[in-house]
Length: 89
Length: 242
Image 1 (cartoon, each protein chain N blue to C red):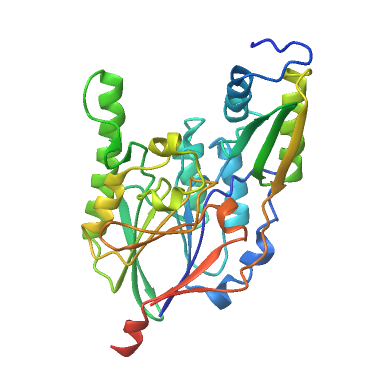
Image 2 (cartoon, rainbow over the protein chains, first blue to last red):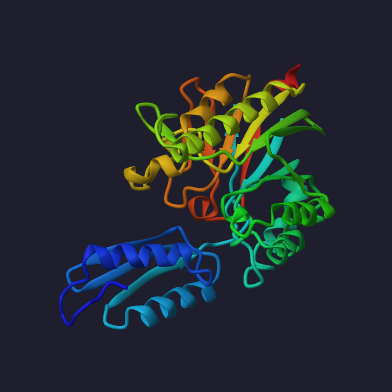
């Protein structure tokens, strides 16, 4: 595992490892989450299909990278019926 | 006119069952068919397929799907297909089907598709065996789609894939991963037939609308892109006048 020390901002290897974990960890299996490095930590954004999956992502990332400050901006995709149709003449 | 509802990348498991159903119950009033653009499950297990069958089975309209890369993860494709077919969902892979709709005969040809990239920025069938195998998969998939499209006798022809046939609908994704999101050969197959509409998923950060080089309209119906239970397209106005 890539080490992350103290107050140093997470480097791109940490970013890559989290991105891989999101896709490959069976309890997550998300390829639609983007990891963005900011000065003081990482921001995760994208959409998932349930609140449970969002919580699981944050739990797994915090468990594996306890020293990396994470901000979550992950939404749950809405499932309402469409209000309009697209006409394709 | 033929009314097509479509969504992809619903990634069902037990925690999602029931979320789509209220909107799906409205389908018989507003659509002739529901097309699913792959990634029905998270890991492609038989148990997850049962969740898909529960959510998308017995809707009162025909349901036609292709599988996505997630549906292959656990190497249980035959079991997944059987669970879906047992509730009447048609699974296409290099195959097609013609439906008699009130507005005319709708032909749907489908294939999962594969990556490879787009013209001038794509993988080549050259070098290591692994690279050749990758590109060969791309070519075989596109060839199968082309043959399936050309084999259908219908009034309106639709291509259904998981991977994208054009880069247009990937806008919003990092350019560097386009070769993992689709390939131009799928677009070429779509343009080889009188296709009226191409639907795909896979690109969660992509955008809805595009066209093939031949002018066929392409729609990315990945659930995170359309942000609703499904989209509805009305096509074939000319059928009402003939």
